[in-house]
Image (cartoon, rainbow, N blue to C red; front, top):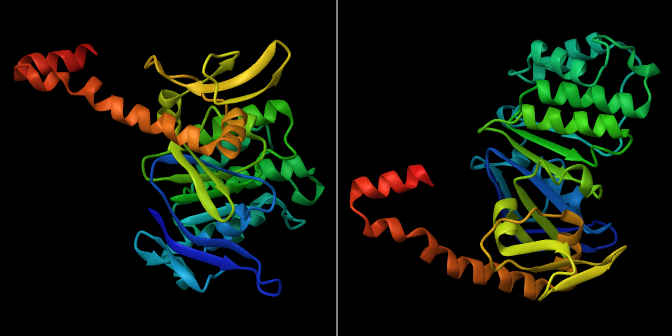
Length: 301
């Protein structure tokens, strides 16, 4: 869906290079977590994906179309909720009447359902809402637009604990095979149970790009694990990341993963390489069975 090739971006006056030869792709039907330290360029990348900023070198395409062209058929399939925003001081009904026509797949039914999930009225006066309530309203509208690309920049900032749970339900219930959601956040605990893929940026490059499933197969996350490749203090000793050698998928802890990748990237990649080398031997045994038996084995598995 989104393809980024040899992308470089430099801030105008400072001439500071944020990205240099970045290559990355975002596929349909996936929820991506985009992680990185402050100032690494996450928001800059998101705005370039939408064509709102334009680099001089490299390309970013959506289904083969250069996003810099800002073609209506492409922009109608994109929605972003920035970290900071303002809503106009009138009713939600009026807001929808003005903005929904730009999104052909907008569903009023979905909008009502999303608002109900957050416990919000169907037609609040937006000028009277708190920041957290405004975020709930805009997320409800964004999901109801049913765009193929949805970008969320720090979406859980300003939400209380119950609302963060409702946010996760909203995202997972609104996913489809044709939709891509990119979430940029520092609040990793708020999203680690809904992600399909994790992308980590550092030094103008992608230093980690793997699915949650791959990560859980390659790495173990726990306390006081033997063979640790990353540790940080815990009340009972140390939180640890270690190579996964037993074949059982581990629950991924994003904070540990992020810190481990920044501190010991080479060891992390070795764990993935080792897992990839071992994987074919575990999956090819049915090739030696008669056809009927191999099909039966796959069903039983």
